[in-house]
Image: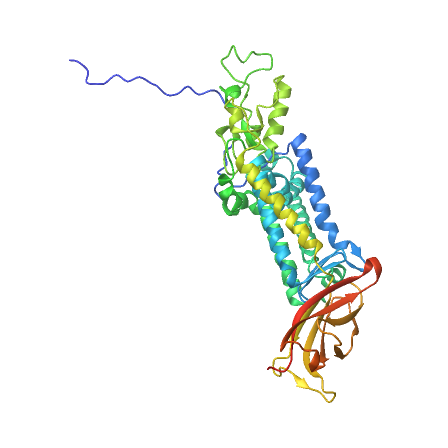
Length: 475
């Protein structure tokens, strides 16, 4: 009796031997990533850039200029002080232009160098690596932390974890105080906060930013990059096959597998990748770069340094994982100068030029003229036609300044009111005045005139003018 069974053939794809790796679901917020520390060229560069940014962030509020905090955004008085220059709400066009410049700079850099902003400059990355450094020093390396967390809690481990969280909270508090110090004079802030004299709102914001820093850098980390950051979602619109990314050379690395240093990988049918998985262990977002370009990659170069160290130990050429382009990985030529990059660069240069032109034209004072609309004119006891105005003088200097006022546009104008006035630093003064003109000098019923505000002498002289109207007898 013949068998009814159908013969089958096992066509399961052959798998190369791999090292044992504990997998973590990076898309699951409840899963913890144990990031392994790595040293190398790109990590030294990242650390130095992060240190420079931290130094600027923490140090700027402490710099004084002309007796005042050099960088201060005074929300209450609606003034922004920047190294001797005062910006008012009227100058917000500069702030809007600055944001546009930052956006196009991000587009330009992303098109050219990928997500280097995320890997080297983003505050989330900088603070996360600072927190990981404390974690390494107080709890041990990544593998040790993984094993410890799988075991019952001990007194020694609880003590080290407590010290870690205290360090995290201290860093978060310093961060919050420094940030709020850009809006409130930092010396006053520190004294009032630590003596329990600060207002409820100031206390709230300091504690709010402390909690945000502690949670984001200590607990959420890659969750922010993967699930919350909008830049990760729209970056693909700026990428092309000539953008520099962190990439794995599959033609050189495959077929991957472990081997001894003395073995010839070609004789074993293997590529240069020994499947050590260090590139995965050092990645702050937990991806495997060998699976191709992924939006979670922040271009920090940690996997590049880890792979280069492995290649060096094996006696292989470095660069199996490197900063490269899709065209280079495919063996084609990379076009650096291309229309999209040139377009972003041209717009960026034009906006930067416009910004400095507008910045150079900012006057350190302001003058607004409001004409009295309740009475078009009146005839005074001297027979002159008189118009009334309210002049608003803005002193943007960071010291008390004396201003001189004049009116132009009509001959023999009589000025009723003070023409020399001293305004306190950063203040606005409303000055009611009247102008009188002989009716025989009025060629038209409505004549354009110009108020001129000036101060200083010689090279230090500043002046500006504002137009208004003088109304005589209507004929």
